[in-house]
Length: 127
Image (tube, rainbow, N blue to C red; front, side):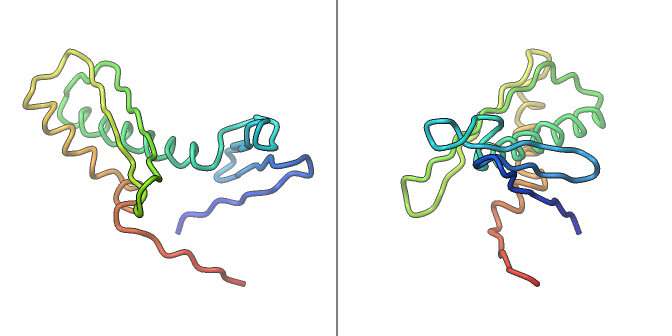
């Protein structure tokens, strides 16, 4: 089981999340009452998904001995409809063929965070 501890600091809306000795500071922009000391929670969610996709692609490409070049993943959250939608754009370097690109884009669906978000998630309050 994975776990993260998040602490709300005494200084406004700033939080710190800690896991495996790593610390991430989260906050809200000044215009939303924060001090803009870190990403907003939804931005962090998108960053987690983008990082997971990029890492999954790199591991797969390394296994295949493919040079992906620079990988950029742009994610946008659209909450306008009844179901939130995350639109993603994946840019790869010029070193790969169309067939490799097709396979890489298919693999992008296999990252752990993407699978969890796609299935839906149950959140329980425990003692």
